[in-house]
Image 1 (tube, rainbow, N blue to C red):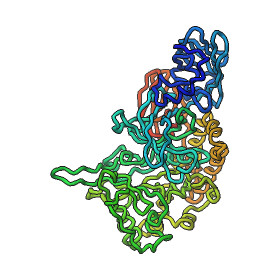
Image 2 (cartoon, rainbow, N blue to C red):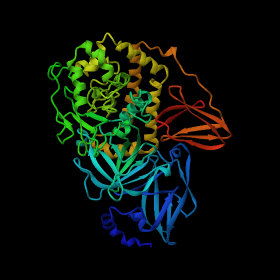
Image 3 (cartoon, helix red, strand yellow):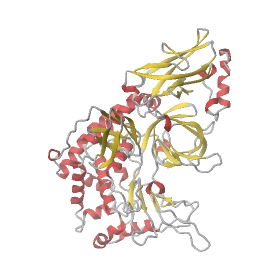
Image 4 (cartoon, rainbow, N blue to C red):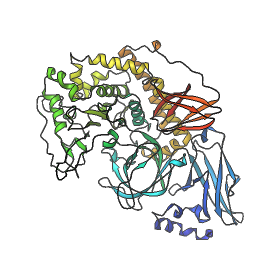
Length: 625
C-alpha cells in the first residue's frame, strides 16, 4: 500500500479526518511510505507540532554506550530507511550510540536512493501517555470524552491500543496556569467505569495527571509524598484494612495531547475511599435503611473552620456554622468538600466533621485533653506534624488536607478522624505561588512561624499546651526514631532527589520540558531549582537535628559489601535480581525491617508489589519508584 511522495500534500487533511483512528490508522509523514515500523518492539510516535518522532527505550539504555534493538519493518522494495548511517532492514538489529540525554537521531527515507523525507527521533526512558480528544477542548467543569494510550519502557505495562477515557482540568489556582493538570477516568465501550492497573500502582478507573506547573523543580510533591509513604503510621483501623494507604504513589511520564508533545507530568493515584479502604455505605433495601459508613472530607480553601476554630475568624468560642445534608452541592462553607459518600447518588453527612470542629474550638483544655485521643488519630497527627516541619509545608497546615473516618456506625471508634496530606508542592523552600520569600529560610522555627502567619490548627496548638501529653517530647522522640532508622535523613532525601534529577536528565524529559514551557515562564531551569533544593534540604535537616538535640554521630548504618555474583535493580514497584548462581535474597526497607526473603535460582528474578522507597537487598541500595 505504498503511496508516492507527491501525495504528501494530502497529509494534513488525513490527520484532521481521523483523530480517533486506531493505532494502525494513525497517520504520520513516515507512514506515507511505510506500512509498519517498530524498533525494539516500540512504535515511533509522531509529534505533529514539533515534526519529530519519539522512541521509548529501556531505562538502562542511557547508562550504556549503545542500545541494540531489533527492527520490524514493512515497506515496498523501492523504499529504504536510515537512522543515522544505519540501514533499517526487517529482522535486523540496529545500534543507537549513547541514546538518551536529549540526543536526537536523524531518520531519512529514500525512494530509489533519492532522499524524499527526513526528520529526527528523540528517545525517552519515561512512559509516554497519549491523550486524544479530537477537536474538543478539555473542560474545567465537566469531563470531556477522549482516548488513552501509553507506551512504556517495560512493554508489558503499555496500553498500546486506545481505550475510552474522560478528562477534566483539575485544581483551583492551578487551572489558571497555561500548563494544565487533569483528572482522568477510564470507561469501557458501553460507558461503564473500568478499572486499570497503571505502572504497578493500584487497580482503579480514576487517576491524576499532575502538571507540576508552579513547582520549578517538578519534584516537590513527589518527594514529600515519598517521604510520607516511607514513615507514616497507618491509621487506627489498620488491623481491619491491611491495604490502606494514606499517601499516593506516582510515576513520571511524558504526555502527548492530540498528537503533539505536551510536556512532563506525574501520573498518580488519588486519595479516595478506595485508597483509604473506608467502609462502603450501604443502599436501602426493603427491610433496612441506607447507612452511611465511611466518610471523607477535603479542606480546599483557607477559612477559620479548616483550622478548627483558631483565631483569625470568629471567636474560638463560637460554634461552627450549621450545615445542610440535603444541599446537593457536596460543599460546605466554600472551603470543605465531601469526597465520600458521593453527594450526587448517596446520602451524605457533615455531622462528624462539624462535631470535630466544635470539639476543638468549644471545649476547654481539660476536656480536650481527656477526649482528644477518641476524636483524632494522634499517632498519625504526630507524623503529619513532622511532615509539615521537615518540608515546611505552610500550605498544608489546615488547607490541602483530608479528614476521614473508617465507619461512622462503628460503636468502638465511629467518631474518630484520621488525616492524610494532599498537594505538597508548596514545600522544600517554596511557597504556593512558586516564590521563596520566607520559605528560603531553612533554619526557621516552624512552630513559632506557623502561629504568626496562619495561627495554625487548633488541635496542634492545644496539644502543645497540654499537660497530659508531652507533645514536644513526643515529637522529639519520634524525630529521633526516624533519624536513627534512616527514614528521615539528609542522605535519604538527597538520594531520592538525585534519582529523580538523573531520570529527568537521562530520559531527555528535562530538556524537552524546559523547551516546551520555559518560554512561558515555567520550568525554564529545572536543574537550578533542584540545586536550590539540595542546599535547602541539607540545611533543614541540620537545623532540625539541632532543634531536637539529635547527634548523627551516635547512630549509623553498617556498610555491607555486595556479593559479586548478584546485581539488583529498582524500578516501578518492583525489584529485579540478576543472579549468576543460586543464592538467598534478603530485602530490607529503610527502617531495617525484612520485607522479602527469596531463594534465587541463577538468572533473572523480578519481585513485584514493593512500595516506593529505598531498600537494601543483600547489601545493595536500590530505589523503588
